[in-house]
Length: 292
Image (cartoon, rainbow, N blue to C red; front, side, top):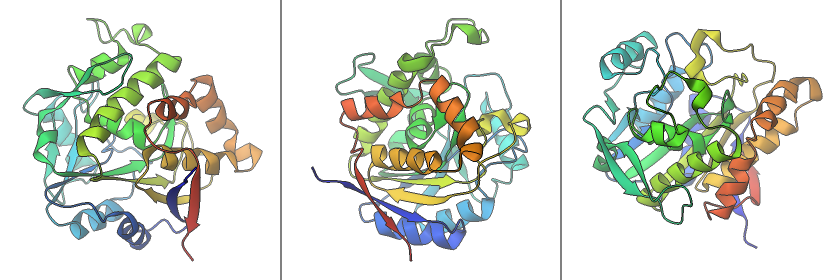
């Protein structure tokens, strides 16, 4: 079986990010969306601004894109979200909040839970998608990699995210949101809709840095980081880059990987990988090419 290619550098810097991007960007053209996680106000673990700025400036016709949240916070509506963007220093270029003007449905091909997924309507303005992800733990998903970034991150705040979480009318009752394998499958199907929409014009970059067990959506309340910084991964294969990220985390010394591993496995997070494979969303076998 042919393996996917994943590029790796232990140098976490803007220069390294750009070098890795050059390895995977051959099909990126036209209007380019860069989907990253802007984070709650003053979150300590978000990707450094200089790295994001350098990537955006290097890609012609590119725009940073985000969506509003379902949960109550400082990014639940566009006005508050734009205030948070400024607080976190994401004001060096325009940011397109994809669901600022509503949502559209795109097909989920081969899904068992969804036939379509609701995404921010502005997503359809773009020809290519660069997925820039801060790889870390996640309260509900176990971990947040490239798959989670486009699954939750492209779904609009009012409809799509509610579908994925299977939230009731009272969206503040988080105890009713779906969890475990069902949640992983819902995310994967949402991500598949986005991946299929862009076809070959989508690439993935995972930054394994400041990996708390909590997502950047937790902000200043994120649990302390215990794992060392590992590096940056780049690939054209969604499943391979998240599998490689997990493999690198699991190779850390026991005291460093313990909390992340416990968070991932207690939430059935590894089922993200299993179900992506079932849906044909990439290859779990990969060749890791390290930057010399």
